Figure 1 (cartoon, rainbow, N blue to C red):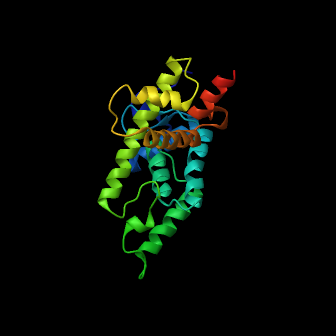
Figure 2 (tube, one colour):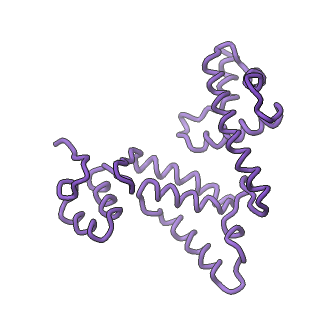
Figure 3 (cartoon, rainbow, N blue to C red):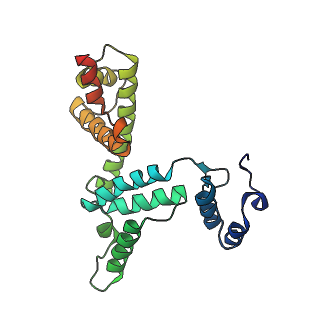
Length: 212
C-alpha cells in the first residue's frame, strides 16, 4: 500500500489518531509516526526522516555533554525533540524538571543563565556571548571552506597547507592560529554528532591522504 503524504486527517489517521488530532495535531502526528514510521513535523509539509535509533544517538551527544557539566545541552536536546516532534527521553525530562524546580525554589539561582550554561557559550556578559556566537559562525564558514578546498585539491595533505590556502582566498578577520582553533572546534563538534563509522576530522583525513 502506498503511504499517504497529504494533509487530509481523514485519510492520514486511524480512529485513535483522529481522536488525538482533536486534542493536538502534534500528538496525532507522533502516534502516526510510531504506527507507520512516517514522522511528520509540526510545520505543514515537513517529514522527519531520521530513524529513532539515529535520534537516540543524537540525543546521546547532548546527554554526554550535560553529564560533563554543560547544562545548556538540556535546552539543545529539548530543541531537537521539538524539531523532530518526539517526546523527551526520560533522562532529559527528569533533568530538565529538576533544573527548573531548583530554579523556582527559594534560594535558587537568580538567573536562568546560571541554570543553563555552557563553557563554549559564555552568557555572563553580552559582549562575551556575542563574541562566542560570532566565533562559531565564522568557524562554520572556515570549516566548510577548508573541507571544500581539501576535497577539491588532492595535493593538499596537511591542515597547515589547507589553512594557508583558505586564508589567502579572502580577508577572514582572523590569523592562522585563531582560524585553526575555530576549524578544530567545529570539526570536533561535527564528529560528535556523526556515527562512529563516519567520524573523520579534517586533520585525520589529510593525514591519511599524506600517508597513502
